[in-house]
Image (cartoon, rainbow, N blue to C red; front, side, top):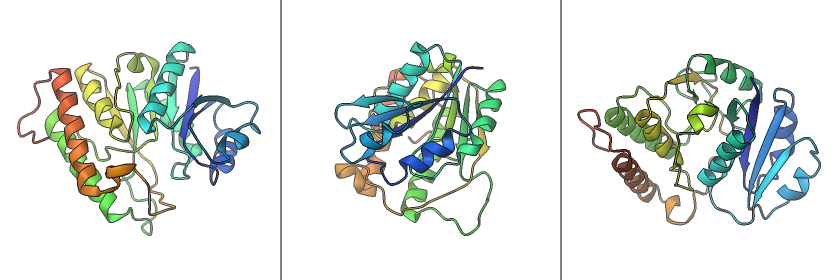
Length: 239
C-alpha cells in the first residue's frame, strides 16, 4: 500500500522539527501543508529536503489544510492517507498501526477516550465538554458510535477521500467528514490513541475562541451538512 502521511501546520516552529524527525522514522512519503505560516515554519521546512511542502499563501484554516492533503493523496495516486497534527499531541510511532486497520475500514479514527494510557493526562475541561456534546450529536443524528469527534489522527483509504466534498475551512471540518462518510456508506473504526495535551490554550480564531459561540457554530455546520446530504437521520437527533 502506497501511503501518504500529511501534517497541516500553521506557525508550528516550536514543535515542527521534532515532530518531522519522529514522523520520518515511521513514514516514507511525508507532506506538510503550510497554511500561511508567518513564523519560522517555512524556513525550518527547508531543512527537510525529503518532505514535500504545499504552502497556502495565507492562512485559510485547519479544514483547508486537510482538504489540500486529500487532494494531494488522490492526485498523487496514493492508496491511503494518514493525518496527524504538529503540536506534539499525536505519537508518530502509531502511524503504521493506523494504516494497517484500513484493511477493515474506509476511515480509521483515533480516539483519545477509548482507553486511558496515562491517568495524569486530562483534557482542558471546556474542550472535553464540547467534544462530548458534538460527539453525542453525531451519534444521535447519524447512528454512529463514536467516542471522539475531533481527533486529528486518522487514516483514510484514497477511495473514501474521492467521495468527500469538504467546504468548511476551519475546525468544524470533521463534522462534514462524518456526515459525508455516512451519506456514502463508508465504514468507520475507532482505535485508541494516547491523550496528550502539552498546552492548555488553542486559538480557534476570532469569535470561535468563545466556547459558547464555537458550540453554536458547530451545530450550524452539522445542520447544514445534514441538509446538504439529504440524510434521513436517526431518531432523537437534536443536532
